[in-house]
Image (tube, rainbow, N blue to C red; front, top):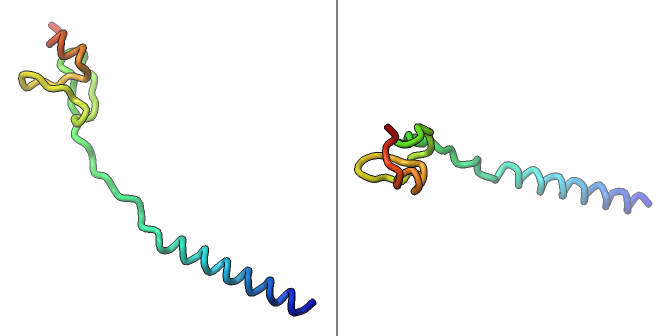
Length: 72
């Protein structure tokens, strides 16, 4: 019976050490910097610049607003 308990204790320690080493080896999530924002020339909504539809130097939030143009 003592051998069995010793075996279980050794397995528990090995399991704990493996989990602890896995937690330490994971790299931290990549930090992303702030993203440039744009403002729709039609509706005025601010959105990420990477998602903009540009025409004649003006940014729009979608093709529909690009088609409608600048709101007067």
